[in-house]
Amino acid sequence: MSNMWGYSTTAGHAEGVSLVGYKVEATDGSIGKVDKHSDDVGSACLVVDTGIWIFGKDVLLPAGTISRIDPDTETVHVDRTKDQIKNAPEFDKDRHLTDPRYREQLAGYYVSHRP
Image 1: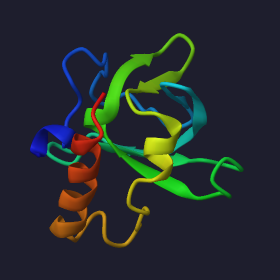
Image 2 (image 1 turned 90 degrees about the vertical axis):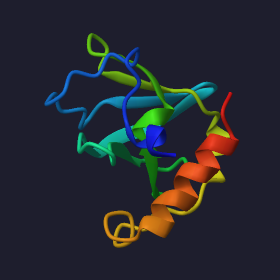
Image 3 (image 1 turned 60 degrees about the vertical axis):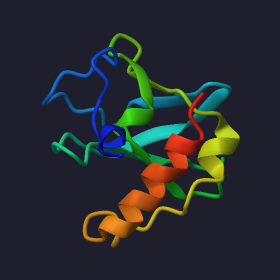
Image 4 (image 1 turned 60 degrees about the horizontal axis):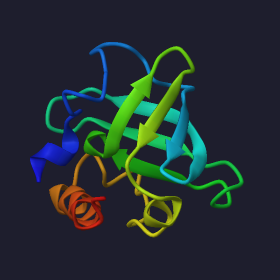
């Protein structure tokens, strides 16, 4: 499932370019803004601040969910629906960097909910 933790070659992500502050669009609407992102090989991801959409919770999106990045509009497009993102395992800011089982669980969820 390591492919979930890397940007696809067609996503349009330039390594080293910050995505913080970019809007994030699911296939059926806006979900928030990028609060943090990582380009680390094998663990690239976005932390999205959902604002009032999910009562102010953050969500973690593996880079493999990103279908396209539009630098002109500063928008990240993901290939999952709002409900799929909302129903993903809850973001755990302490475990996502240190617990491989958590990362596997999250990646497994998004793999099973591919378009």
